[in-house]
Image 1 (tube, rainbow, N blue to C red):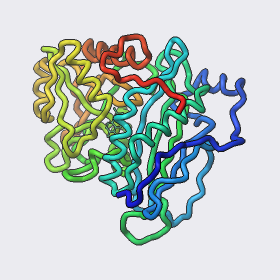
Image 2 (tube, rainbow, N blue to C red; image 1 turned 135 degrees about the vertical axis):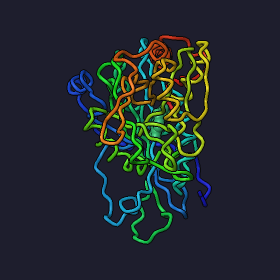
Image 3 (tube, rainbow, N blue to C red; image 1 turned 120 degrees about the horizontal axis):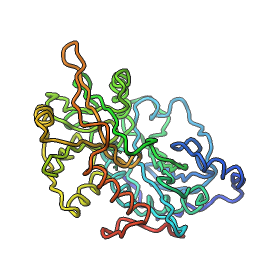
Image 4 (tube, helix red, strand yellow; image 1 turned 120 degrees about the vertical axis):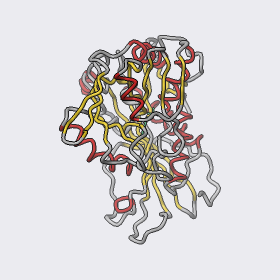
Length: 372
Ligand SMILES: *Cc1c(COP(=O)(O)O)cnc(C)c1O
């Protein structure tokens, strides 16, 4: 889409916005949780079929006013992104591969029949917001500023078709580690009862609808002490796909990483892509191919698959301890050990060292936050 030619968006700061007093901000940043408090500002731009993208600005973070008839509330025409800004030892703030988020937001927009925001405008919005709310970027181990860009259909109508108006927004806030302890493995629930997406569906798009469809399975998992769900393919439930919001990897006793290809039903994680590159740098094998539940089970029980982990921007890399699943009336476990495995730890460390500026960024992934 994009019927009108849009000028580059400036995302200028609206005059007279308010800021959280320094003392109060210090308290928030001491224990930020995972974005419990949103920062002072938000980036906004509007789109209509007639005008294209327009009216960009940075204004105070505020409650939205929307008509109850807005399309997103009924047909879930919505997409989002997630990325982080990191404060390095020298005080400077950096973004990790933001151009990948810009590109993926466009791909998601295409699938959800939403307008595509030019990548340049996406980058302007995140650089500007981080710059303006830079005081909100915490320093310290595993601390970051999490950004949540999103697009939704805001046209007021109840008929079913692609909306002719949409909003783009970026909000953000300080984030501590997603998991309290990066070295303890988490248990996950393997579901063959529910699917988050199907062939030719929206699995490869980052859209709220995929998350909504994953929540019942997540509740099922929570009953069994699992925080996340590992989904299988919708057609046969024989192939491993990914978690509700993270990509899946298994590691063999030969130090080879196996992860399913992202074609179609699996989201192209930027962390996944980065881990694949770092694995090659570290001399690990990488095998991107379909992985069956059967192979995962038999080879893990035979001691040939020794680690499993999930990865995504929020939690970075989470080692998997047990994969629990239902078989008849029983709940069985595939055990990878309570401690995060060595390959998982090595790759996690390599990635966070680049993100927080402690290791050389040989891939050119880090972008300093600019005055735009
Ligand atoms: C966001 C997301 C991921 C992880 O992507 P990153 O770019 O690494 O954060 C993986 N799977 C799904 C379904 C996601 O929505």
